[in-house]
Figure 1 (cartoon, one colour):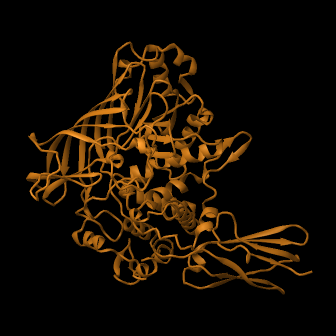
Figure 2 (cartoon, rainbow, N blue to C red):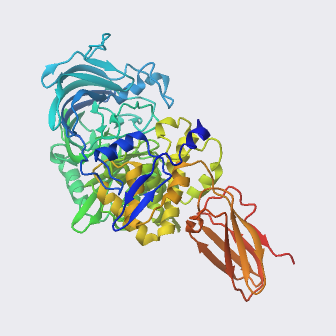
Figure 3 (cartoon, rainbow, N blue to C red):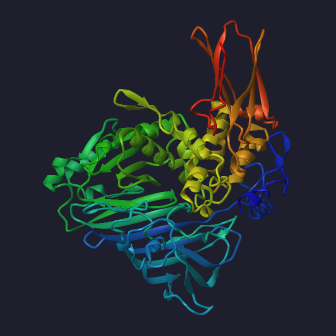
Length: 635
């Protein structure tokens, strides 16, 4: 499958590319039939812009949910208004039931604790446009509802015509896992991170129609942009943090904590809203047996919340753009020492991402970093474990960068994880975190990690759909390290200013939409006014590795250094020449020197000093064999 499949990534189709004032032939990029169909229908275009007939569907969610801490039970009721903006008549609606990952017998790509195996999500009632639907799985072909592992297929008694809508009303329950932490779960006594918890309408798009891919625990998500109006009911003393804007803080917090909360939203300093001493007083919330936390969020792809009666709460705010701040909260276990710095790291990340790279103002009004497990992003929300301080800074910056990819950009990360994970690895590279007396730049090891697996059998091309990459190593390197290095290499080729300009053009065209890999490739081609296929093909479509070497050095009046390229990946050349007096000279060439497909490149220099040695490479450039990267002069 591996090699034979990718020999097909040759000239199966030539796509005409029309740039601004130029006409180019984009050859050698394999374009699957689904994408060819989208271009033919005019929903996408080969200049990288949304086509004249582009559309996308959306939903409006009104949800009431009760969290019962003693039993870890979620009791939910929701009304969904689903808008069919497509040109297609829909005969069914696909509903995602992600909690069925924990259902007995479910196929999974991640291990779960045996004690967390349940009956999954229980749908007690379902209505479609006020008509009740039997939710028990049917045996006949005419059954109105059928199930796969994490999808429910609802056959409509009346078709959903183009440019119309329908209403779904669903009541359900499920139990939050006690010990398994696949991006969410129970974290000690009375502390919960609740994600993938409500029946959700799947994406229907112009590429695949209904997204029927199953959630198996490894690959992530693909959602429409929607509106959420959510009320979370919890017992007294519990505080809830969620996606969106908190509508009624005065109904839950007592005055002292309400004042701290409101002040923190406009402050540059860290406000300790809930301290360890405050927890002992048990006077944080209003004296009510049940509290209702009300949140609203617009134009976001998902909604999550967390609740605890024992977590500390730090808050501050960051300037996202002139006259607009983003409120930032860090909520954490008192024993998690790294989290005492997380509000500061988060503020620094938001400001860097807003002004430096990508330089697009952080799009949301708030952000919560919750102390749970792993590292996982959600709209306006992050779930992070505790780490050593440098790793804590790196992880929080990575997760916050996900705000742009996949949320701001609507990426299908189920199929193309590199379109979001790679950017989250790359974007925060320049954040100068201060850890003690040292300055730490996150994610500086991407090239080193890539070199460790580059070219090996388990390394797969990025254009292999992520759902196919069951192996953790294959998935991780195709999703994180290879794309991060590819983006850095392209930045080096184009120059930082032009790269940022073109990236911003891609984001401007596709934010709030659903870009595909080809929309990314073609936008960069169009905005740079050049055909970058020579770069896209080896880095994104093909199997191969990076391996440069010092092939030959000729000395005389001038010094000629011949660099050989053994692997197919175009990478920069970085040389350090050390002279016998201890001084050095450096030389850099971008990966563009390999654009024509040459296997050698000669660098000619005129030196007035005697050379002691020449070193090729740098920590930022992957190289599977560094043994042939040094030339030493024999004395």
